[in-house]
Image 1 (cartoon, helix red, strand yellow):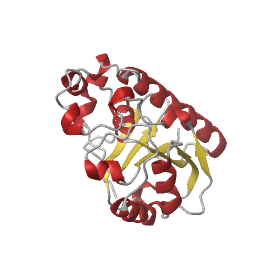
Image 2: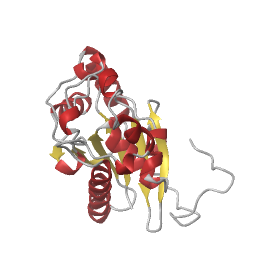
Image 3: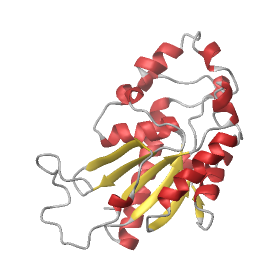
Length: 226
């Protein structure tokens, strides 16, 4: 199966002011624009077969800066969690809401007023990534690399699933603005290759040498990395 690079959008004006943007059409601030450009310098090392994105402006803007020549395929399955009445409010105020500790320690039970359940967000995001991975693998082969640009909680939910974690553990994962997390799916299980990273991606380019083991096998001893 293919390998997906999960790119979080760059910092936004809402991130900078401590406001929960949700599905509001906020855009990158000056730092976010710089972060997107830096991410692009790394991503352009790779032969990406597809670029899929949340349709929200901050994700599309991030990809347009990072990969200006890419064809961006929007997919609602990668959109931000629907935070409902929480959207547009400051995080320091939301921290006083009785729902806040539920979101922190038992997110699988969290349902945002006039919004989405976190469990529903997780399910549709994971299904979207797996659907695209199957499609890209079928079209381009198991060594294909592709990019999905989306949001922090969405990425954390996808990574948690790949690690075999319950959604209630997903807050232990970090996905900073413009960070890249990488998951390689195989017929039997996914491998989490990178999490919340900002370094070189060149080691992701498939080696021309034939694999000595099944794609589903873990490297005993940890493997050689780059």
